[in-house]
Image 1 (cartoon, rainbow over the protein chains, first blue to last red):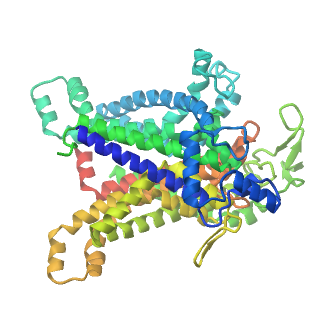
Image 2: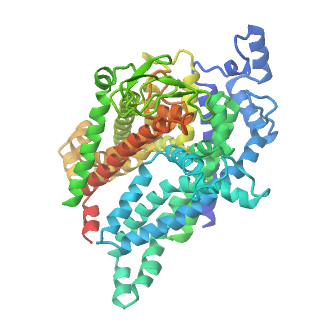
Length: 323
Length: 317
Protein backbone atom coordinates (compact mmCIF):
# COMPACT_ATOMS: atom_id res chain seq x y z
CA UNK A 1 0.00 0.00 0.00
CA UNK A 2 2.75 2.44 0.98
CA UNK A 3 4.62 1.63 -2.19
CA UNK A 4 1.46 2.24 -4.21
CA UNK A 5 0.99 5.65 -2.59
CA UNK A 6 4.63 6.60 -3.16
CA UNK A 7 4.44 5.56 -6.81
CA UNK A 8 1.25 7.56 -7.23
CA UNK A 9 2.92 10.60 -5.59
CA UNK A 10 5.88 10.45 -7.95
CA UNK A 11 3.45 10.26 -10.86
CA UNK A 12 1.60 13.23 -9.43
CA UNK A 13 4.72 15.40 -9.27
CA UNK A 14 5.63 14.43 -12.84
CA UNK A 15 2.17 15.35 -14.14
CA UNK A 16 2.19 18.66 -12.29
CA UNK A 17 5.59 19.50 -13.75
CA UNK A 18 4.39 18.61 -17.24
CA UNK A 19 1.30 20.77 -16.75
CA UNK A 20 3.29 23.85 -15.76
CA UNK A 21 5.54 23.38 -18.79
CA UNK A 22 2.57 22.94 -21.10
CA UNK A 23 0.79 26.02 -19.75
CA UNK A 24 3.98 28.03 -20.09
CA UNK A 25 4.45 26.85 -23.67
CA UNK A 26 0.84 27.70 -24.56
CA UNK A 27 1.09 31.23 -23.21
CA UNK A 28 4.65 32.22 -23.97
CA UNK A 29 5.97 30.06 -26.76
CA UNK A 30 3.12 29.71 -29.27
CA UNK A 31 4.57 31.03 -32.53
CA UNK A 32 3.39 34.59 -33.07
CA UNK A 33 2.39 35.21 -29.47
CA UNK A 34 3.88 38.32 -27.91
CA UNK A 35 3.14 38.80 -24.21
CA UNK A 36 4.46 42.36 -24.31
CA UNK A 37 1.61 43.46 -26.53
CA UNK A 38 -0.84 43.44 -23.66
CA UNK A 39 1.79 44.85 -21.30
CA UNK A 40 3.14 47.93 -22.97
CA UNK A 41 -0.16 49.66 -23.69
CA UNK A 42 -1.43 50.91 -27.01
CA UNK A 43 1.04 51.93 -29.75
CA UNK A 44 4.16 51.50 -27.61
CA UNK A 45 7.51 52.84 -28.78
CA UNK A 46 10.26 50.27 -29.37
CA UNK A 47 12.05 51.60 -26.27
CA UNK A 48 9.00 50.99 -24.07
CA UNK A 49 8.68 47.47 -25.44
CA UNK A 50 12.35 46.77 -24.75
CA UNK A 51 12.06 48.19 -21.22
CA UNK A 52 8.95 46.17 -20.48
CA UNK A 53 10.49 43.03 -21.92
CA UNK A 54 13.50 43.49 -19.68
CA UNK A 55 11.40 44.28 -16.61
CA UNK A 56 9.40 41.07 -16.96
CA UNK A 57 12.38 38.99 -17.95
CA UNK A 58 10.97 38.32 -21.41
CA UNK A 59 14.35 38.99 -23.04
CA UNK A 60 15.81 35.86 -21.46
CA UNK A 61 15.86 32.44 -23.05
CA UNK A 62 12.64 30.39 -22.86
CA UNK A 63 13.86 27.89 -20.22
CA UNK A 64 15.12 30.79 -18.10
CA UNK A 65 11.76 32.54 -18.48
CA UNK A 66 10.03 29.37 -17.35
CA UNK A 67 12.25 29.06 -14.27
CA UNK A 68 11.74 32.74 -13.42
CA UNK A 69 8.01 32.42 -13.76
CA UNK A 70 7.90 29.32 -11.55
CA UNK A 71 10.10 31.02 -8.98
CA UNK A 72 7.80 34.03 -8.85
CA UNK A 73 4.77 31.76 -8.71
CA UNK A 74 5.85 29.25 -6.07
CA UNK A 75 8.90 30.58 -4.21
CA UNK A 76 8.71 34.36 -3.90
CA UNK A 77 4.98 34.49 -4.75
CA UNK A 78 5.28 38.01 -6.14
CA UNK A 79 4.08 37.44 -9.68
CA UNK A 80 2.14 40.55 -10.70
CA UNK A 81 -0.78 40.93 -13.05
CA UNK A 82 -0.01 42.53 -16.42
CA UNK A 83 -3.16 44.61 -16.34
CA UNK A 84 -2.81 45.95 -12.82
CA UNK A 85 0.73 45.77 -11.52
CA UNK A 86 -0.34 46.35 -7.93
CA UNK A 87 -2.22 43.05 -8.03
CA UNK A 88 -0.22 40.12 -6.73
CA UNK A 89 -1.46 37.01 -8.47
CA UNK A 90 -0.90 34.43 -5.73
CA UNK A 91 -2.67 36.34 -2.89
CA UNK A 92 -5.50 37.18 -5.30
CA UNK A 93 -6.09 33.48 -5.92
CA UNK A 94 -5.77 32.69 -2.22
CA UNK A 95 -8.49 35.21 -1.37
CA UNK A 96 -10.78 34.04 -4.18
CA UNK A 97 -10.48 30.35 -3.31
CA UNK A 98 -12.82 30.41 -0.24
CA UNK A 99 -15.63 31.78 -2.44
CA UNK A 100 -15.23 28.98 -4.96
CA UNK A 101 -14.95 26.45 -2.17
CA UNK A 102 -18.17 27.71 -0.50
CA UNK A 103 -20.02 27.45 -3.80
CA UNK A 104 -18.77 23.98 -4.68
CA UNK A 105 -19.10 22.52 -1.19
CA UNK A 106 -22.76 23.51 -0.82
CA UNK A 107 -23.60 22.34 -4.33
CA UNK A 108 -21.87 19.02 -3.63
CA UNK A 109 -23.98 18.38 -0.53
CA UNK A 110 -27.14 19.10 -2.54
CA UNK A 111 -26.18 16.95 -5.47
CA UNK A 112 -25.14 13.95 -3.37
CA UNK A 113 -28.40 13.94 -1.41
CA UNK A 114 -30.69 14.52 -4.38
CA UNK A 115 -28.92 12.21 -6.81
CA UNK A 116 -28.93 9.29 -4.36
CA UNK A 117 -32.62 9.91 -3.66
CA UNK A 118 -33.45 10.12 -7.38
CA UNK A 119 -31.39 7.06 -8.30
CA UNK A 120 -32.87 4.94 -5.50
CA UNK A 121 -36.40 6.11 -6.25
CA UNK A 122 -35.99 5.26 -9.93
CA UNK A 123 -34.89 1.72 -9.06
CA UNK A 124 -37.64 1.25 -6.45
CA UNK A 125 -40.26 2.57 -8.87
CA UNK A 126 -38.97 0.53 -11.79
CA UNK A 127 -41.79 -0.68 -13.98
CA UNK A 128 -43.99 2.31 -13.14
CA UNK A 129 -44.22 5.53 -15.13
CA UNK A 130 -42.11 7.31 -12.47
CA UNK A 131 -38.83 5.65 -13.42
CA UNK A 132 -38.75 6.94 -17.02
CA UNK A 133 -40.12 10.29 -15.86
CA UNK A 134 -37.35 10.72 -13.29
CA UNK A 135 -34.78 9.75 -15.90
CA UNK A 136 -36.19 12.27 -18.38
CA UNK A 137 -35.84 14.97 -15.73
CA UNK A 138 -32.29 13.81 -15.13
CA UNK A 139 -31.56 14.02 -18.88
CA UNK A 140 -33.01 17.53 -19.08
CA UNK A 141 -30.76 18.52 -16.18
CA UNK A 142 -27.74 17.21 -18.06
CA UNK A 143 -28.72 18.94 -21.28
CA UNK A 144 -28.96 22.49 -19.95
CA UNK A 145 -26.04 24.90 -20.20
CA UNK A 146 -25.37 25.89 -16.59
CA UNK A 147 -24.81 29.57 -17.41
CA UNK A 148 -28.17 29.73 -19.18
CA UNK A 149 -29.94 28.04 -16.28
CA UNK A 150 -28.26 30.58 -14.00
CA UNK A 151 -29.59 33.46 -16.08
CA UNK A 152 -33.09 32.01 -16.08
CA UNK A 153 -32.84 31.62 -12.29
CA UNK A 154 -31.72 35.24 -12.03
CA UNK A 155 -34.59 36.35 -14.21
CA UNK A 156 -37.07 34.52 -11.99
CA UNK A 157 -35.63 35.16 -8.53
CA UNK A 158 -34.21 38.65 -9.02
CA UNK A 159 -36.86 40.16 -11.26
CA UNK A 160 -40.06 38.43 -12.36
CA UNK A 161 -41.00 36.68 -9.12
CA UNK A 162 -38.84 38.72 -6.75
CA UNK A 163 -41.84 40.71 -5.60
CA UNK A 164 -43.77 37.62 -4.56
CA UNK A 165 -43.42 35.67 -1.31
CA UNK A 166 -41.63 32.89 -3.21
CA UNK A 167 -38.37 34.71 -3.86
CA UNK A 168 -38.54 37.97 -1.92
CA UNK A 169 -35.87 36.53 0.43
CA UNK A 170 -33.29 36.25 -2.39
CA UNK A 171 -30.61 38.90 -1.81
CA UNK A 172 -29.01 40.79 -4.71
CA UNK A 173 -26.21 39.02 -6.59
CA UNK A 174 -22.89 38.89 -4.81
CA UNK A 175 -21.07 37.18 -1.99
CA UNK A 176 -20.84 37.64 1.78
CA UNK A 177 -18.00 35.79 3.54
CA UNK A 178 -19.01 33.06 5.96
CA UNK A 179 -16.90 34.64 8.71
CA UNK A 180 -18.69 37.96 8.33
CA UNK A 181 -22.31 36.86 8.38
CA UNK A 182 -23.13 33.13 8.11
CA UNK A 183 -26.84 33.66 7.45
CA UNK A 184 -26.23 36.11 4.59
CA UNK A 185 -23.54 33.79 3.25
CA UNK A 186 -26.14 31.05 3.11
CA UNK A 187 -28.86 33.21 1.53
CA UNK A 188 -26.53 34.53 -1.17
CA UNK A 189 -25.45 31.02 -2.14
CA UNK A 190 -28.73 29.07 -2.14
CA UNK A 191 -29.69 29.81 -5.75
CA UNK A 192 -26.12 29.32 -7.10
CA UNK A 193 -25.87 26.02 -5.20
CA UNK A 194 -29.02 24.62 -6.75
CA UNK A 195 -28.10 25.92 -10.21
CA UNK A 196 -24.66 24.34 -10.12
CA UNK A 197 -25.94 21.04 -8.72
CA UNK A 198 -28.68 20.42 -11.33
CA UNK A 199 -26.27 18.94 -13.90
CA UNK A 200 -24.63 16.69 -11.31
CA UNK A 201 -27.92 15.51 -9.81
CA UNK A 202 -28.99 14.38 -13.28
CA UNK A 203 -25.67 12.76 -14.10
CA UNK A 204 -25.14 10.97 -10.77
CA UNK A 205 -28.75 9.77 -10.59
CA UNK A 206 -28.38 8.15 -14.03
CA UNK A 207 -25.06 6.54 -13.15
CA UNK A 208 -26.37 5.31 -9.81
CA UNK A 209 -29.50 3.84 -11.37
CA UNK A 210 -27.49 1.98 -14.03
CA UNK A 211 -25.08 0.68 -11.37
CA UNK A 212 -27.88 -0.48 -9.10
CA UNK A 213 -29.55 -2.33 -11.96
CA UNK A 214 -26.19 -3.90 -12.85
CA UNK A 215 -25.57 -5.31 -9.37
CA UNK A 216 -29.16 -6.47 -9.11
CA UNK A 217 -28.20 -9.57 -11.12
CA UNK A 218 -25.14 -10.33 -9.00
CA UNK A 219 -25.07 -13.51 -6.96
CA UNK A 220 -24.66 -11.85 -3.59
CA UNK A 221 -27.80 -9.77 -4.13
CA UNK A 222 -29.73 -12.88 -5.12
CA UNK A 223 -28.36 -14.61 -2.02
CA UNK A 224 -29.40 -11.71 0.19
CA UNK A 225 -32.89 -11.83 -1.23
CA UNK A 226 -33.02 -15.64 -1.03
CA UNK A 227 -32.16 -15.66 2.65
CA UNK A 228 -35.15 -13.43 3.20
CA UNK A 229 -33.59 -10.06 4.03
CA UNK A 230 -36.07 -7.19 3.84
CA UNK A 231 -35.96 -5.40 0.46
CA UNK A 232 -34.86 -2.14 2.06
CA UNK A 233 -31.84 -3.79 3.61
CA UNK A 234 -30.89 -5.47 0.32
CA UNK A 235 -31.18 -2.18 -1.50
CA UNK A 236 -29.25 -0.03 0.94
CA UNK A 237 -26.74 -2.44 2.49
CA UNK A 238 -25.95 -4.66 -0.48
CA UNK A 239 -26.73 -2.85 -3.69
CA UNK A 240 -26.14 0.79 -2.78
CA UNK A 241 -22.89 0.08 -0.97
CA UNK A 242 -21.27 -1.58 -4.00
CA UNK A 243 -22.54 1.11 -6.32
CA UNK A 244 -20.95 3.75 -4.11
CA UNK A 245 -17.45 2.81 -5.32
CA UNK A 246 -18.08 4.34 -8.75
CA UNK A 247 -20.01 7.16 -7.14
CA UNK A 248 -17.16 8.09 -4.80
CA UNK A 249 -14.54 8.12 -7.55
CA UNK A 250 -16.71 10.23 -9.85
CA UNK A 251 -17.42 12.58 -6.99
CA UNK A 252 -13.76 13.07 -6.12
CA UNK A 253 -12.90 14.04 -9.69
CA UNK A 254 -15.88 16.35 -10.19
CA UNK A 255 -15.27 18.06 -6.88
CA UNK A 256 -11.64 18.63 -7.84
CA UNK A 257 -12.60 19.97 -11.26
CA UNK A 258 -15.14 22.39 -9.82
CA UNK A 259 -12.89 23.69 -7.04
CA UNK A 260 -10.11 23.99 -9.63
CA UNK A 261 -12.10 26.43 -11.74
CA UNK A 262 -14.83 24.38 -13.38
CA UNK A 263 -17.44 26.46 -11.55
CA UNK A 264 -16.31 29.47 -13.59
CA UNK A 265 -19.58 29.86 -15.52
CA UNK A 266 -21.74 29.73 -12.38
CA UNK A 267 -19.49 32.27 -10.67
CA UNK A 268 -19.67 34.64 -13.63
CA UNK A 269 -23.46 34.47 -13.88
CA UNK A 270 -24.03 34.99 -10.15
CA UNK A 271 -21.30 37.58 -9.64
CA UNK A 272 -19.39 35.45 -7.13
CA UNK A 273 -15.78 36.68 -6.84
CA UNK A 274 -14.20 33.22 -6.90
CA UNK A 275 -11.27 31.81 -8.83
CA UNK A 276 -13.42 31.31 -11.91
CA UNK A 277 -14.47 34.96 -11.87
CA UNK A 278 -10.81 35.93 -11.55
CA UNK A 279 -9.98 33.82 -14.60
CA UNK A 280 -12.87 35.36 -16.52
CA UNK A 281 -11.80 38.94 -15.69
CA UNK A 282 -8.25 38.24 -16.75
CA UNK A 283 -9.52 36.62 -19.94
CA UNK A 284 -11.35 39.76 -20.91
CA UNK A 285 -8.18 41.84 -20.43
CA UNK A 286 -5.85 39.07 -21.70
CA UNK A 287 -3.92 39.21 -18.46
CA UNK A 288 -1.58 36.28 -19.15
CA UNK A 289 0.08 35.82 -15.70
CA UNK A 290 -3.30 35.65 -13.94
CA UNK A 291 -4.76 33.24 -16.51
CA UNK A 292 -1.66 31.13 -16.33
CA UNK A 293 -1.69 31.05 -12.53
CA UNK A 294 -5.38 30.17 -12.31
CA UNK A 295 -5.01 27.44 -14.92
CA UNK A 296 -2.08 25.93 -13.04
CA UNK A 297 -4.02 26.22 -9.77
CA UNK A 298 -6.97 24.42 -11.36
CA UNK A 299 -4.84 21.67 -12.87
CA UNK A 300 -3.21 21.15 -9.46
CA UNK A 301 -6.55 20.57 -7.79
CA UNK A 302 -7.66 18.13 -10.41
CA UNK A 303 -4.49 16.06 -10.44
CA UNK A 304 -4.38 15.99 -6.67
CA UNK A 305 -8.06 15.02 -6.53
CA UNK A 306 -7.52 12.23 -9.03
CA UNK A 307 -4.51 10.94 -7.08
CA UNK A 308 -6.56 10.99 -3.87
CA UNK A 309 -9.36 9.13 -5.61
CA UNK A 310 -6.92 6.45 -6.80
CA UNK A 311 -5.61 5.93 -3.28
CA UNK A 312 -9.09 5.91 -1.79
CA UNK A 313 -10.27 3.54 -4.48
CA UNK A 314 -7.44 1.16 -3.69
CA UNK A 315 -8.49 1.26 -0.04
CA UNK A 316 -12.14 0.63 -0.86
CA UNK A 317 -11.54 -2.06 -3.42
CA UNK A 318 -8.50 -4.31 -2.81
CA UNK A 319 -8.68 -5.70 -6.37
CA UNK A 320 -7.27 -2.41 -7.70
CA UNK A 321 -4.18 -2.57 -5.52
CA UNK A 322 -1.19 -3.69 -7.57
CA UNK A 323 0.81 -6.55 -6.05
CA UNK B 1 -40.50 -0.92 -28.67
CA UNK B 2 -41.16 2.29 -26.80
CA UNK B 3 -37.48 3.05 -26.40
CA UNK B 4 -36.86 2.79 -30.11
CA UNK B 5 -39.72 5.17 -30.78
CA UNK B 6 -38.32 7.68 -28.29
CA UNK B 7 -34.88 7.44 -29.91
CA UNK B 8 -36.47 7.90 -33.33
CA UNK B 9 -38.38 10.95 -32.09
CA UNK B 10 -35.10 12.36 -30.75
CA UNK B 11 -33.44 11.78 -34.13
CA UNK B 12 -36.30 13.57 -35.90
CA UNK B 13 -36.08 16.50 -33.47
CA UNK B 14 -32.35 16.80 -34.08
CA UNK B 15 -32.80 16.67 -37.86
CA UNK B 16 -35.50 19.35 -37.64
CA UNK B 17 -33.19 21.61 -35.64
CA UNK B 18 -30.42 21.09 -38.20
CA UNK B 19 -32.71 21.77 -41.17
CA UNK B 20 -34.24 24.86 -39.57
CA UNK B 21 -30.80 26.23 -38.67
CA UNK B 22 -29.48 25.72 -42.17
CA UNK B 23 -32.57 27.43 -43.55
CA UNK B 24 -31.51 30.59 -41.67
CA UNK B 25 -30.75 32.64 -44.83
CA UNK B 26 -34.16 31.75 -46.23
CA UNK B 27 -35.86 32.82 -42.99
CA UNK B 28 -33.91 36.06 -42.81
CA UNK B 29 -34.63 37.07 -46.43
CA UNK B 30 -38.14 35.84 -47.02
CA UNK B 31 -39.84 35.79 -43.63
CA UNK B 32 -38.10 38.28 -41.36
CA UNK B 33 -37.01 40.59 -44.23
CA UNK B 34 -33.84 41.58 -42.44
CA UNK B 35 -30.08 41.20 -42.34
CA UNK B 36 -29.41 39.74 -38.89
CA UNK B 37 -25.79 40.89 -38.97
CA UNK B 38 -26.32 44.58 -39.78
CA UNK B 39 -27.22 46.83 -36.88
CA UNK B 40 -30.55 48.56 -37.35
CA UNK B 41 -30.48 51.24 -34.67
CA UNK B 42 -32.69 53.77 -36.44
CA UNK B 43 -34.94 51.25 -38.16
CA UNK B 44 -38.67 50.88 -37.80
CA UNK B 45 -41.07 47.99 -38.14
CA UNK B 46 -44.81 47.59 -38.38
CA UNK B 47 -46.73 46.17 -35.41
CA UNK B 48 -50.54 45.92 -35.57
CA UNK B 49 -50.59 48.29 -38.52
CA UNK B 50 -48.58 50.96 -36.72
CA UNK B 51 -45.04 52.11 -37.50
CA UNK B 52 -42.81 51.46 -34.44
CA UNK B 53 -39.12 52.13 -33.73
CA UNK B 54 -37.03 48.99 -33.36
CA UNK B 55 -35.05 50.63 -30.56
CA UNK B 56 -37.51 52.46 -28.34
CA UNK B 57 -36.47 55.56 -26.42
CA UNK B 58 -37.51 55.74 -22.79
CA UNK B 59 -38.44 52.08 -22.63
CA UNK B 60 -36.14 51.42 -19.69
CA UNK B 61 -37.18 50.87 -16.09
CA UNK B 62 -37.08 54.56 -15.12
CA UNK B 63 -38.45 55.81 -18.42
CA UNK B 64 -34.93 56.48 -19.67
CA UNK B 65 -32.51 54.57 -21.85
CA UNK B 66 -33.11 52.61 -25.02
CA UNK B 67 -34.83 49.25 -25.10
CA UNK B 68 -35.13 47.10 -28.21
CA UNK B 69 -38.53 46.00 -29.36
CA UNK B 70 -39.96 42.94 -27.62
CA UNK B 71 -41.56 39.88 -29.24
CA UNK B 72 -44.07 40.83 -31.94
CA UNK B 73 -45.05 37.17 -32.52
CA UNK B 74 -45.32 37.98 -36.23
CA UNK B 75 -42.89 37.48 -39.10
CA UNK B 76 -40.68 40.53 -38.46
CA UNK B 77 -38.96 40.54 -35.05
CA UNK B 78 -40.78 37.37 -34.01
CA UNK B 79 -39.11 37.33 -30.60
CA UNK B 80 -37.89 40.92 -30.68
CA UNK B 81 -34.59 42.64 -31.35
CA UNK B 82 -31.25 42.80 -29.55
CA UNK B 83 -29.67 46.07 -28.47
CA UNK B 84 -28.37 46.73 -31.96
CA UNK B 85 -31.83 46.36 -33.44
CA UNK B 86 -31.12 42.99 -35.05
CA UNK B 87 -33.83 40.35 -35.42
CA UNK B 88 -33.18 37.82 -32.64
CA UNK B 89 -35.05 34.92 -34.24
CA UNK B 90 -33.01 35.21 -37.44
CA UNK B 91 -29.85 35.43 -35.35
CA UNK B 92 -30.81 32.36 -33.34
CA UNK B 93 -31.19 30.38 -36.57
CA UNK B 94 -27.87 31.64 -37.96
CA UNK B 95 -26.32 31.02 -34.55
CA UNK B 96 -27.61 27.47 -34.64
CA UNK B 97 -25.81 26.94 -37.91
CA UNK B 98 -22.50 28.01 -36.39
CA UNK B 99 -23.09 26.05 -33.17
CA UNK B 100 -24.00 22.89 -35.06
CA UNK B 101 -21.12 23.24 -37.50
CA UNK B 102 -18.67 23.57 -34.65
CA UNK B 103 -20.35 20.92 -32.50
CA UNK B 104 -20.71 18.26 -35.19
CA UNK B 105 -17.39 19.19 -36.83
CA UNK B 106 -15.36 18.92 -33.66
CA UNK B 107 -17.10 15.74 -32.48
CA UNK B 108 -16.50 14.01 -35.83
CA UNK B 109 -12.90 15.22 -36.02
CA UNK B 110 -12.35 14.17 -32.43
CA UNK B 111 -13.65 10.65 -33.07
CA UNK B 112 -11.59 10.34 -36.28
CA UNK B 113 -8.36 11.49 -34.65
CA UNK B 114 -8.94 9.29 -31.61
CA UNK B 115 -9.63 6.32 -33.88
CA UNK B 116 -6.48 6.85 -35.94
CA UNK B 117 -4.34 7.35 -32.83
CA UNK B 118 -5.84 4.26 -31.21
CA UNK B 119 -5.00 2.19 -34.32
CA UNK B 120 -1.46 3.57 -34.25
CA UNK B 121 -1.16 2.73 -30.56
CA UNK B 122 -2.39 -0.78 -31.25
CA UNK B 123 -0.09 -1.43 -34.20
CA UNK B 124 3.16 0.39 -33.87
CA UNK B 125 4.43 -1.29 -30.77
CA UNK B 126 4.51 -0.52 -27.10
CA UNK B 127 6.71 2.55 -27.55
CA UNK B 128 4.17 4.45 -29.67
CA UNK B 129 1.44 3.30 -27.33
CA UNK B 130 3.14 4.54 -24.19
CA UNK B 131 4.05 7.92 -25.73
CA UNK B 132 0.48 8.45 -26.92
CA UNK B 133 -0.92 7.42 -23.56
CA UNK B 134 1.35 9.87 -21.73
CA UNK B 135 0.27 12.74 -23.99
CA UNK B 136 -3.39 11.82 -23.55
CA UNK B 137 -2.97 11.59 -19.78
CA UNK B 138 -1.51 15.07 -19.78
CA UNK B 139 -4.44 16.54 -21.72
CA UNK B 140 -6.79 14.54 -19.50
CA UNK B 141 -5.23 16.03 -16.37
CA UNK B 142 -6.25 19.48 -17.54
CA UNK B 143 -9.69 20.74 -16.67
CA UNK B 144 -11.49 20.79 -20.03
CA UNK B 145 -12.69 24.36 -19.78
CA UNK B 146 -9.36 25.70 -18.53
CA UNK B 147 -7.42 24.10 -21.38
CA UNK B 148 -9.94 25.34 -23.92
CA UNK B 149 -9.80 28.80 -22.36
CA UNK B 150 -6.00 28.91 -22.45
CA UNK B 151 -5.83 27.84 -26.08
CA UNK B 152 -8.62 30.18 -27.14
CA UNK B 153 -7.09 33.17 -25.36
CA UNK B 154 -3.73 32.64 -27.01
CA UNK B 155 -5.13 32.00 -30.47
CA UNK B 156 -7.31 35.09 -30.26
CA UNK B 157 -4.36 37.33 -29.36
CA UNK B 158 -2.45 36.33 -32.47
CA UNK B 159 -2.92 39.30 -34.79
CA UNK B 160 -2.60 37.31 -38.02
CA UNK B 161 -4.04 34.05 -36.86
CA UNK B 162 -2.20 30.78 -36.66
CA UNK B 163 0.26 29.88 -39.40
CA UNK B 164 1.41 26.32 -39.37
CA UNK B 165 2.94 25.23 -42.61
CA UNK B 166 0.32 25.61 -45.30
CA UNK B 167 -2.50 25.75 -42.73
CA UNK B 168 -3.57 29.27 -42.03
CA UNK B 169 -6.39 29.94 -39.60
CA UNK B 170 -7.82 33.42 -39.08
CA UNK B 171 -8.73 34.28 -35.45
CA UNK B 172 -12.33 34.97 -36.48
CA UNK B 173 -12.70 31.64 -38.25
CA UNK B 174 -15.03 28.97 -36.90
CA UNK B 175 -12.06 26.61 -37.18
CA UNK B 176 -10.50 28.11 -34.04
CA UNK B 177 -13.20 26.93 -31.62
CA UNK B 178 -13.66 23.72 -33.64
CA UNK B 179 -10.01 22.72 -33.37
CA UNK B 180 -9.75 23.71 -29.72
CA UNK B 181 -12.79 21.67 -28.74
CA UNK B 182 -11.53 18.74 -30.81
CA UNK B 183 -8.16 18.73 -29.10
CA UNK B 184 -9.64 18.98 -25.63
CA UNK B 185 -11.92 15.96 -26.04
CA UNK B 186 -9.61 13.59 -27.97
CA UNK B 187 -8.52 11.71 -24.80
CA UNK B 188 -12.14 11.06 -23.83
CA UNK B 189 -12.69 9.08 -27.03
CA UNK B 190 -9.13 7.77 -27.32
CA UNK B 191 -9.13 5.84 -24.03
CA UNK B 192 -12.10 3.54 -24.65
CA UNK B 193 -11.24 3.06 -28.34
CA UNK B 194 -7.63 2.16 -27.57
CA UNK B 195 -8.82 -0.41 -25.05
CA UNK B 196 -11.07 -1.86 -27.71
CA UNK B 197 -8.28 -2.01 -30.31
CA UNK B 198 -5.94 -3.78 -27.88
CA UNK B 199 -8.57 -6.36 -26.98
CA UNK B 200 -9.69 -7.01 -30.57
CA UNK B 201 -6.04 -7.49 -31.58
CA UNK B 202 -5.87 -10.60 -29.38
CA UNK B 203 -8.94 -12.24 -30.95
CA UNK B 204 -8.62 -15.53 -32.88
CA UNK B 205 -9.77 -14.16 -36.20
CA UNK B 206 -7.03 -11.58 -36.11
CA UNK B 207 -4.49 -14.28 -35.33
CA UNK B 208 -5.93 -16.24 -38.26
CA UNK B 209 -5.44 -13.23 -40.51
CA UNK B 210 -1.87 -12.86 -39.27
CA UNK B 211 -1.28 -16.53 -39.97
CA UNK B 212 -2.54 -15.98 -43.50
CA UNK B 213 0.17 -13.36 -43.86
CA UNK B 214 -2.01 -10.25 -43.86
CA UNK B 215 -0.10 -6.96 -43.85
CA UNK B 216 -0.51 -4.63 -40.89
CA UNK B 217 -2.47 -2.14 -42.98
CA UNK B 218 -4.86 -4.89 -44.01
CA UNK B 219 -5.17 -6.03 -40.41
CA UNK B 220 -5.90 -2.51 -39.28
CA UNK B 221 -8.50 -1.62 -41.83
CA UNK B 222 -10.30 -4.83 -42.62
CA UNK B 223 -10.00 -6.81 -39.38
CA UNK B 224 -9.78 -4.34 -36.51
CA UNK B 225 -11.45 -1.15 -37.76
CA UNK B 226 -14.91 -2.70 -38.43
CA UNK B 227 -14.92 -4.08 -34.91
CA UNK B 228 -14.04 -0.86 -33.09
CA UNK B 229 -16.11 1.44 -35.24
CA UNK B 230 -19.27 0.62 -33.26
CA UNK B 231 -17.67 1.99 -30.09
CA UNK B 232 -17.06 5.26 -31.91
CA UNK B 233 -20.57 5.35 -33.38
CA UNK B 234 -22.06 4.84 -29.93
CA UNK B 235 -19.99 7.74 -28.61
CA UNK B 236 -20.67 10.15 -31.48
CA UNK B 237 -24.11 11.54 -30.49
CA UNK B 238 -22.98 11.98 -26.88
CA UNK B 239 -19.79 13.69 -28.08
CA UNK B 240 -21.80 16.11 -30.23
CA UNK B 241 -23.97 16.90 -27.19
CA UNK B 242 -20.82 17.63 -25.19
CA UNK B 243 -19.14 19.72 -27.88
CA UNK B 244 -22.28 21.80 -28.48
CA UNK B 245 -22.38 22.62 -24.76
CA UNK B 246 -18.66 23.42 -24.72
CA UNK B 247 -18.96 25.70 -27.73
CA UNK B 248 -21.83 27.54 -26.06
CA UNK B 249 -19.77 28.01 -22.90
CA UNK B 250 -16.71 29.31 -24.77
CA UNK B 251 -18.81 31.68 -26.86
CA UNK B 252 -20.63 32.87 -23.75
CA UNK B 253 -17.22 33.76 -22.32
CA UNK B 254 -16.55 35.60 -25.62
CA UNK B 255 -13.63 33.35 -26.54
CA UNK B 256 -15.50 31.09 -28.93
CA UNK B 257 -17.25 32.36 -32.03
CA UNK B 258 -16.14 35.93 -32.73
CA UNK B 259 -18.37 38.77 -33.97
CA UNK B 260 -19.73 39.48 -36.54
CA UNK B 261 -20.46 35.74 -36.56
CA UNK B 262 -22.98 34.55 -33.98
CA UNK B 263 -23.65 31.29 -32.20
CA UNK B 264 -26.13 30.30 -29.50
CA UNK B 265 -23.53 31.05 -26.86
CA UNK B 266 -22.77 34.56 -28.13
CA UNK B 267 -26.48 35.40 -28.35
CA UNK B 268 -26.98 34.36 -24.71
CA UNK B 269 -24.03 36.61 -23.90
CA UNK B 270 -25.68 39.50 -25.82
CA UNK B 271 -28.92 38.83 -23.97
CA UNK B 272 -27.29 39.12 -20.55
CA UNK B 273 -27.48 42.91 -20.61
CA UNK B 274 -31.16 42.77 -21.64
CA UNK B 275 -32.07 39.94 -19.27
CA UNK B 276 -34.73 41.74 -17.22
CA UNK B 277 -36.16 43.96 -19.96
CA UNK B 278 -36.08 41.60 -22.96
CA UNK B 279 -35.48 38.09 -21.58
CA UNK B 280 -36.25 36.33 -24.89
CA UNK B 281 -32.87 37.31 -26.32
CA UNK B 282 -31.13 35.07 -23.76
CA UNK B 283 -33.88 32.48 -23.33
CA UNK B 284 -34.44 31.51 -26.99
CA UNK B 285 -30.90 30.31 -27.81
CA UNK B 286 -30.79 28.44 -24.49
CA UNK B 287 -33.96 26.55 -25.39
CA UNK B 288 -32.39 25.63 -28.73
CA UNK B 289 -29.27 24.32 -26.96
CA UNK B 290 -31.43 22.39 -24.50
CA UNK B 291 -33.48 20.77 -27.28
CA UNK B 292 -30.40 19.93 -29.35
CA UNK B 293 -28.42 18.42 -26.48
CA UNK B 294 -31.45 16.61 -25.08
CA UNK B 295 -32.26 15.03 -28.45
CA UNK B 296 -28.64 13.94 -28.87
CA UNK B 297 -28.49 12.46 -25.36
CA UNK B 298 -31.69 10.48 -25.91
CA UNK B 299 -30.45 9.38 -29.33
CA UNK B 300 -27.10 8.39 -27.82
CA UNK B 301 -28.84 6.25 -25.19
CA UNK B 302 -30.91 4.62 -27.92
CA UNK B 303 -27.89 3.86 -30.11
CA UNK B 304 -26.03 2.42 -27.13
CA UNK B 305 -28.95 0.21 -26.16
CA UNK B 306 -29.24 -1.00 -29.75
CA UNK B 307 -25.56 -1.84 -30.17
CA UNK B 308 -24.57 -2.90 -26.67
CA UNK B 309 -26.20 -6.23 -25.73
CA UNK B 310 -25.26 -5.83 -22.07
CA UNK B 311 -27.42 -2.73 -21.85
CA UNK B 312 -30.33 -4.68 -23.39
CA UNK B 313 -29.96 -7.35 -20.76
CA UNK B 314 -30.11 -4.66 -18.14
CA UNK B 315 -33.36 -3.32 -19.56
CA UNK B 316 -35.02 -6.73 -19.41
CA UNK B 317 -33.73 -7.55 -15.92
